[in-house]
Length: 414
Image (cartoon, rainbow, N blue to C red; front, side, top):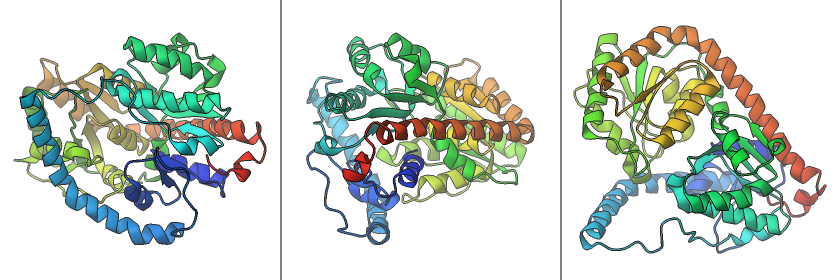
């Protein structure tokens, strides 16, 4: 998660200006006062209009309460607009995958352009993938060091995107991958030199690891999310809800709904209905909750059942086993890569399995039974990934510190 990366950048470069592209500047200020929101149209703003911590404390709660009050109505409006567009057969405003966002002006004066961790370099997110490649290429042409960290790459079967990536990625100075199962081979196919690549794990591992508890949790955590890139049938959803409720009742566990994304109500819309009829249910966090709040909830669980990658990261890093449910090649790659990094405490269940009820029941029971014994193994794996992730970021620091000593102090804009 970007909070860990921003913290590490600030520790290494205390005086640097850390600009982050965002469409929600008030939310960024609230959640991450160490970073400055930037957009494509404007250059770096003036320092000090609101002192960092004071400005965050003043504006942050207001912004978060506003998001909490408006996200549900905005979600209903998006649904209505989509329905109207479908009925009227309104064409998209631009061809799918065409980059529509201009290069941010702030890149011209940056000392480093860093693509933060995510699973966006893939066919299922063509807009973000092309947008990132355009920005990296722009920086490269101006001699600005470029790096990518915490990356989950692929699938990459779109020919145009593959060719574009093969042009830009070999010129990126350093690429850190969050998994070693698919990413290294894909980068090799794209022509990226091996010495520029390192498998580090996800930066969010450190956030979860910091919040690990000595005592074993007692709940079953649950989060289901569906999207265009992961279609979930009514049958699969109903079976998942039935099995989780039944196993929770038999095991004497409460179900904790875990909400990590408020965009379009995607986590609440798919998760909360599964709780109907459950014997014991915890309250979800409010809409103004943070990643730390969610990670804290995860730590009170004995096991987790989720289709959301970063919830599984939070869980495994805290020593909490995770049943990872998937319904697409995109999520297959995510979860199998994550399981490979941790080596224990994961079961991957395919939602289109004809024997879904039996397979899911077995996975939940197995991880519940072995939860105590897997904690040390998971913590050890998390610790190794944190060490690798920090070593990877040290290589990023060297790109600036050794290529132009003092440059970040003069310009100060990673």
